[in-house]
Length: 164
Image 1 (cartoon, rainbow, N blue to C red):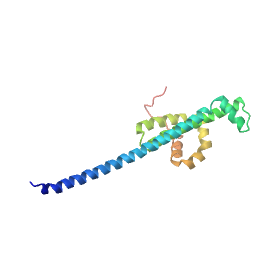
Image 2: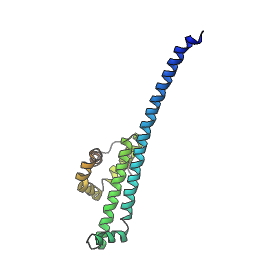
Image 3: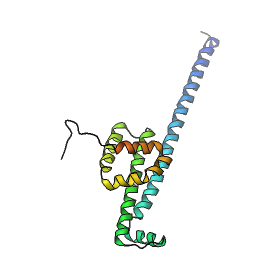
Image 4: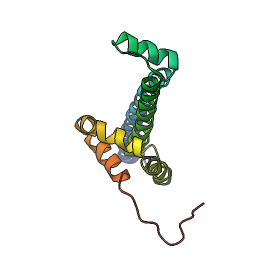
C-alpha cells in the first residue's frame, strides 16, 4: 500500500481527532464556568453569613442599634439576634437550592437538605420571618422563592415514617 493511499485515512483520523478535542474542550469549559460560578456563590454566601453571625454578638448588635438611633434593650438585642439567625438559615437554604440548580448537588443530598429545611420552616418564627421577607426575595430570586414556598407546605405522614 502506498503512502498516497494512506493520506485520506490519516486526514480523516486527524479531522475526527480535532473535532473530538474541540468537543472535549467545550465540555471542560462549560464545567469550569459552572464550578467558577458555584465558587463565587459560595464565597458570597460565606461573606454574608459571616456578617450576619458577627451581628449576632450582643455588643455588636447593641452598637448597631445605637448607631441607627435605637436603644439596645435586652429584648431588642435578642430580637435582632434571632432575626440575623433566621437570615443565616435562609442563606443556607439558598446555597443548597443554587448548588442543586447548577447540578453540583445530587438529588439525594438535595432531598435530605430540603427535608431539614422543611422541618425548620415548621418553626412559627422562622416561618414568620419568611412571610415578612418573601416579597423581597421573590422579586430578586423567583425560583428560590417558589422553592421556599413549597417547603412551607406540610406533607402528610406516610406509612413507615419514623417518628421519635
